[in-house]
Length: 391
Image (cartoon, rainbow, N blue to C red; front, top):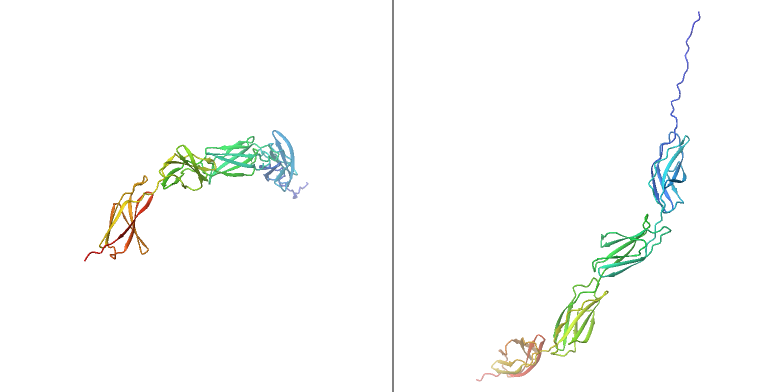
């Protein structure tokens, strides 16, 4: 009988090491356009258990693939050059290892390579009534046609509404604006994909000044005028013109930068008319209404002035002047000069009584004059003295 023996076998299980596969597809593909080029970036995918060898960046325009660019495995970006400015492109990325290629990533957003235009040149602002008109020379398009210009007004720190102007137009008028308020305008050129550097200019709209309000102050052979202008039109007033009329005839004009003037060498008791107008950078404004004034003079001397002295007193009497020249007498002045000292007494009456006069019999000299709105006129001169009381 045969015997069977059992012996042990050294049996090894099959290997449990995972098998390498192709990489996963790259993700988050982003394209950033530049001048004739696009920079493409992506997130590094899982390598499938086998080191990545490289990437293939596929360039798409419309539905067609126009180019494939290889990038090393050590990079997660590629710069795609020699692209056409103004043409839209999209990009996808494929990773490769020893096992083969991954699936293609999703496509990036479409981007357009482009240049940045230059700044507008020779920007000019023309100011007028409640408006500013801008004009400029075309910006350098750097080889890519311009699409438009964008203008933003700034009112102090406040930004106004941006305005688009077609590239075929080289100017724009802003209206209505506030006269006298400065506005800064910022202009940039655009090719539809990029905007160029800013060009800016400040302007202040303005118009001619308002009508002056005039006051006259007549006196002997002269008239003083003063005036004010509430509305400068938004531009500083640089000059005023006074026109003097005798009847309908212009007999004189006076130009001045002041807000008043003195017109001299006129005839007393003659009526003159005056107008005033103001000028600024926009030109001459409205003319004031004619205002009448009659140069005049101070009253003539009081008539029949007399004095009588007594014991320490002197009394004066007089009659009104023959001529007041159209300006009523308002008061009288009695003036005396004694030992170099001048003393005045005033009254609205036609007489005056002085007491406490030194009773030394000396001769005293008095001067009586009448006053109107023009001033004091010529005086009536009196020689007076006191008379001591008899014992």
